[in-house]
Amino acid sequence: MQLPDAYVYAHDQLDSLSPDVTLVILHPDFYGQHRLLAPVLTEPDAHIFFLAVPRSGISLQELLAQLQVTFQAQLKSTPSAFPAEPEAAAKAVAKLLQGQGKTRLIIDAFDQTLQDEVSPFIRALALQLSGDTRVILGGRELPMQLLTSEALQDKIALVPINPDKMILDYVSAASKTVLEVRALGPGRVLINGRLIEHWDGVLPRTLFFYFVDRGMTTRDEIFQTFWPTLSTREATNVFHVTKRKISEILGTDLTVYWSGFYRISPDLELHYDVLKFVEAVQNAAVAEDDDAIRLLQNAIELYHGPFLSTMEQDWVQERREELAMTYAEALAGLARIYKTRDDKLNALGYYLRAAATSPQREDLARSIMELYRDLGRPRTALEAYQRLEAELKNSLNVSPAPQTTELAQEIQASL
Image (cartoon, rainbow, N blue to C red; front, side, top):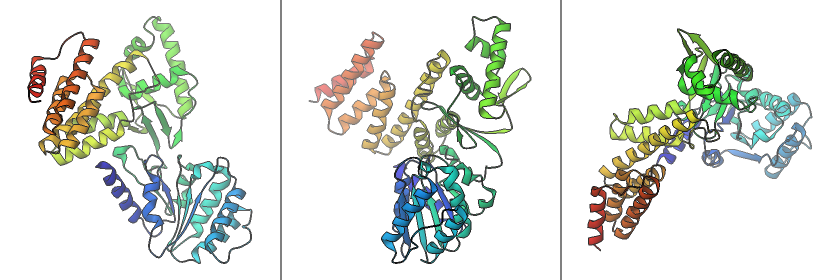
């Protein structure tokens, strides 16, 4: 249900762009760039030129050669070759495109080009274009040289933008220090769109995520979590060295110290998926059903996997279990709403996903059994009971509660 809405939202943003925008970047964090391109490729009365960059490391000259082939396939007359210099090549390509009327040049997998070579060409091309001619770039990474270009500020747009889903606008935020942290999954950090790939060891990365997840913490809490067996002096030395490494890696200070607490620096614009995830689930609990559905679907989309799945420290495991329970509750919350609306299939689907995350929860198992029974599948309902029974015996060495057992007996009797 949420997928079409996401595409409608994205397509509406694309449709509402100013005519002055000649360069569109499809946001790599939007899962479905190709589907978003579908209506563009079928625009009425538009000349569409589509080029998929074939491999990594494509130079400007190779890209121009690929463009030459693309144009020749659709146009009767094209120059034999584009100039090698970026500005001159941009002028030639712009002249060709604008001679066609309403035109879209789509370059997919743009991140596979050599950015230092190709970005100056794209920048010059966007500045040359006007009217109803537009370049659209897709790829798996943000082309930061283009997004941070002052010359392009009125000519470029990033689509779609939705901060609630961690799809951020790096065009309008180019003058700020934006810290994007995704901890639901293996862990991913970007600062001003730049992916942090090298952490100089496990400790700086782990301490970084601890700071971000806590938001505010004391030195004693940090020492007890990371160096409980070291003396205060030894722990202090390791802490300051590690904190300095984090600042060097980010290129800015992550924290400030105030009134006995380390806090995230106010100079940073932090976007943290865990915070958005938890807030969405909390807000859904007091919202009307339609708003609750939207909030819970957003929370589920944000949950890309267990919290920091590549780390195994005690504090990480505790937080992982806590957030997994929140995720199960988000799924169960959606299931309950659909059940009250008599949408049994949707309700069952979300209950099954919740139970896969929390297999020991009997309330989920009972709801699944009831829905299977109501859908005319009593034997499948009993199989759900048997799975619960085995799970409780193997993990806790207990039996299902009488309420659950009585439901199973009622279903058995109906066979």
